[in-house]
Image 1: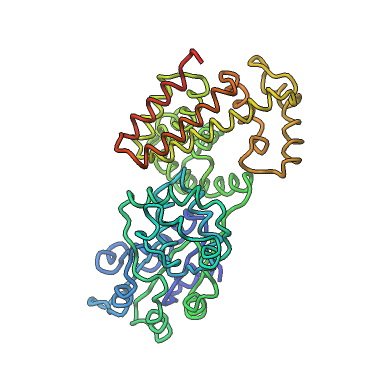
Image 2: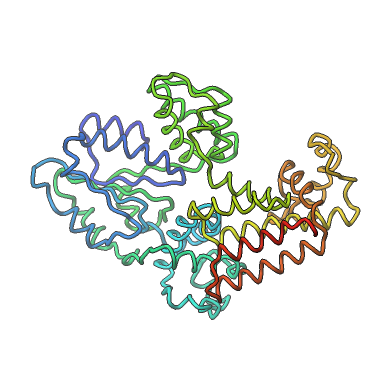
Length: 452
């Protein structure tokens, strides 16, 4: 079933009892959902006919009761269960745990929600894992419960996500696998005019519920667009559709500025584009200056500002970037991990420079010359190191160039000492009542001191 076929059926009055929209492209899912809703139900009927439920916390029994209740007004009744967890299973752990790790730094709230799903499916109680309780789980027990994950690196991410989750305010959902009654309801048929719509990122196609919806309703997949070029093309295609529908255009420099601020992420870019359209008002073209004014400082801007200020030993700029990140709600453990990563990369660069394995490099070398003379050595070292993602060898040319310039401001012993201090801060976060902001500020002031 294609999206176009779904739209055509709905225009002809053919409504399926249930729809499942799944995949990694959240923006495309939401866009498709809105179009489906527009075809199913006019705005005037939505106050009493359209209901949204949080799938990560929704009670399945409540969902069952709701979809069995016919409309009192005789019209359609549509229930949208967003970001549901009921299509997950233990066989999804191979995908679920990387999602937790990937979002720890950039989107801790999202990581916490993935962790909630993990707890529900694995059967772990939060209390059993807290206070170092997770350390009691042996490697063998972990592999048995968490299929597809060996668990060797869980000491790196599990303590962090436990702290983030505990402070997130999320509560456990009721039984992710208690879907027997829902399956029977769908097989028996919903009351006339009732419709159930699920959205989810990952599904286990072997689950009985998935197969029932595939047979009785409609399943639509919105897969992740791979590769930077494809992501940009996809974003351009979607943004052009939106701009054209409103009689707007966007200059090439504005497009580049927007991509720089959003990383060409589809959902985020489209959200900012909607703001820009409102910002320019009647004006037909969005310019670069509009992007700079309307798309304010992002978390990524302040992350870049923090690491740059640290590398340049600029105390005031580092403290300002830290404050901005904390004001945006960035968790202190995430900020700590970003600083640790930056120091580690500088240390690796310093070791390489001191080893004599690299061509001569100094602050005056421009980027083009660096690419031609120095960076090829990194490619060779990366191949010999087995392409480890956490090593500086695997970074792209420009970040490596910037890191090389930064590390010239620190000697080897100072960088090692900073890593030791960061370890002490990590321990203090978890064992003392000291304000995390104060600990990070003291570290940045000392790390940026000019006398080292």
